[in-house]
Length: 234
Image (cartoon, rainbow, N blue to C red; front, side, top):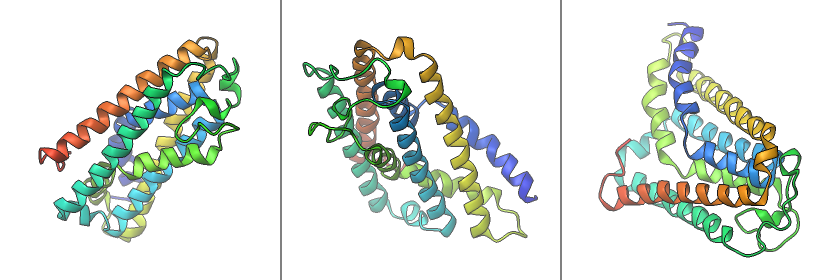
């Protein structure tokens, strides 16, 4: 198997998983609707930075620790579940606050909305930093050990014998990262095209509530898996 063949075969596995509706897509779409494209792109970059970190960890064998240690895997899974529950709870709770979206402009998707329409830590007022959006995306991904275990399970299947495994692993991780960012960028721009319907306060409120429920459900499922001893189920 050549490098090109390995990358093409890996893409056949990665693309369906990338476009499958899930946590990352929901988070980016929510950010696009409520905070605008700038923050949505920052969130997407954060998500893909987290994916790249997991890919590098898998390439150097660091994620083998998660595969070998049930305690380490469950501890990280529980931390991730707690973070998602906090994030989803903040979105859901804030969506019921009077005046929450009063500062949201009708052209949010063309630029960015004031910090008052975003989470977490947005109650101080003033513009919300794009770095915070980046941090939310990155943290959400880094606290999901299933990403690392996915790499650990798949990357070894696409390593040509005549190529250094570390280098090839990094190359596949970068490939997945690029595919993921392209998909998220398509979602962001699709939301921008629909801004006439998505930029209203009512839609922003509904988006926060739906995304909040998604995060709570995902975090609850992770936490339940830990408590019932099913955290290793991929």
